[in-house]
Amino acid sequence: MKLVIHDLPAAEWEKLQAEYAGDRIVADQGTIRPCVGCFRCWNKTPGECAVRDGYENMGALIHRADEVVVISRYTYGGFSAFVKNVFDRSLGYVLPQFEVVGGETHHQKRYAEDKPFTFLFYGHDLSAEEKESARRYVKAVCANIRGYVKDVRFSEREEQALPEAPQAAVRPSGRTVLLIGSMRARSGNSAKLARKLGERLRGGYEIVPLPRYLARPAELYSALESAETLVLCVPLYVDGLPAQVIRFLEGLRQYPRRGIRRVYVLANMGLYESSQLVNLFSAVKQWCGKTGTEYCGGLGVSAGELLGALTGVTPFRLGPTRRVAEGMDALADAIRRGSRTEDIYAEPFGFPRSLYIGIANANWNRTARKNGVRPEELYRRLEPSDRPAEARKNAYPNMDLTEAMRARHSVRSYTGKPIGGETLETLEKLIEEYNRESGLHIQLVRGEPMAFGGAMAHYGKFSGVRNYFALVGKKSRRLDEACGYYGEKLVLAAQALGLNTCWVGLTFRKVPDVFRVDAGERLALVIAVGYGTAQGAPRRSKTVADVSCAENAPEWFTKGVEAALLAPTAINQQKFFFTLRGDKVSAGTGLGPFSRVDLGIAKYHFELGSGKDRTVWL
Ligand SMILES: Cc1cc2nc3c(=O)[nH]c(=O)nc-3n(C[C@H](O)[C@H](O)[C@H](O)COP(=O)(O)O)c2cc1C
Image (tube, rainbow, N blue to C red; front, top):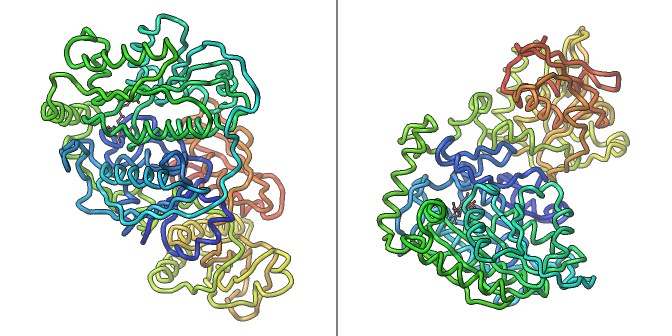
């Protein structure tokens, strides 16, 4: 199984996806959050990211793949913001501890393997120089995450028209903005170094934390309209700019009233050799080249976690921070004069690499203990059996059920690929288990084209459906809700097995004799299942406040409701409603077609999202 990380728009992906049928796909759902730089993937939940948005298992997914394929729009010598975001969130794939590899400091491997990475960059009229910078960049990325570059390819694709220069003339203001690009904002090393730089600018500057504007970037672009000098104060993340900074630069590039004339960089990084900042400087240079802005030089500081901490406690010009202080004098001087400086690479003074590595490695054990993690647990290797309880029960190869819940969208068009082998066995076992548990009579119909072959299916825009779950059960008031609950269990299992699905209430034909409806039973509805020609797309959704009521909602309740909002409902009506009562929840629904089926589906999502079981219901 390959792991494919891509940023392609749906229409472009559709052309490619048959090539990757059965592979694990990580695509932009519009929900990914930036790495917050907390290092919990190293010292609290080793191997796994603490930000829970569906992209927390990247380290384990890379590990489980035979090969990683990365498809990215060429963006200033590296990845697009989304693909870079995925890499930033994959830090848990390696260990926190350092070692020297090929003459440079890198992280130790968590998994005893050499993972091949193939990179497919697309862009418009990429020059030989640009291609070379992308090659250099992915080599550095692979060295850092301890895989190897299997292949790098480039393809031509018209880029969205981006303005190459400001469209509106803005008068120079002399304002200098030090933009902090780290999610650690004011408490991070970028901010500490920015404040030191600020002291040398002697007024006339402002420090602006990017995280404050993530949800309202236009406000930031507009605030920067009158800035003449921008100093990007950024950490190095996976050999490049952090994803949120790339996103910011992309947005600013398209902003029509850019006042900025000159750009400087104050970058810092965790490893010892500041030369590893070369790709980050190059990215900013490329951005400047595209925007008609002058790149005026940068200061790169290595061993950031050490030197950042020392900015506050030792005389800055003495001891390990000496070279940083000297570099900062030169940078500040250039900023004040509006002139250029060479890129300056500063490393700890009088502090040998071996000592740095020794201290840093020992430090991880201390922070782990503080977090209640035994030092040996830092080396945890995530295998499928380390998944949450529900996923463990079913042990899917590609994703767990929570991931499946986020990845799944309705799919109406299917390839002819039959369901067979272990996938079929797993589905049949699950049907048996769920029928036993619920008293339902769910059946899987395979290789049957008639139900979705006629005019009704055409009306429902179906094509290629050959398989479906027939949701049958004893006629009762509770039949619809039970079909929703257990049907959705099958839907998410199917998704985790690499299949696609669509709930269908009306637009199909009841074909006689292909499934059984015994005396006293009723067919409630069906679910089309198979290998989709596309992965579908997300729908508009109501909000947590629209569909729930709780005073001082505990986190588990909110997470449950958020998960329920991902549930498919008939005509996207989302008529369900959850009310917190003590430590229990009452769930109800308004009137509407199939609304009780929807309720069953939403309740199963709520259980998965909240981590509760069926005893949560009143
Ligand atoms: C997701 C992530 C990726 C990182 N990648 C690198 C890297 O490739 N090379 C490096 O030297 N340091 C890397 N670091 C370490 C940071 O650059 C370093 O901790 C820096 O001091 C953080 O600055 P801040 O406190 O302003 O966020 C990474 C840190 C994170 C959280």
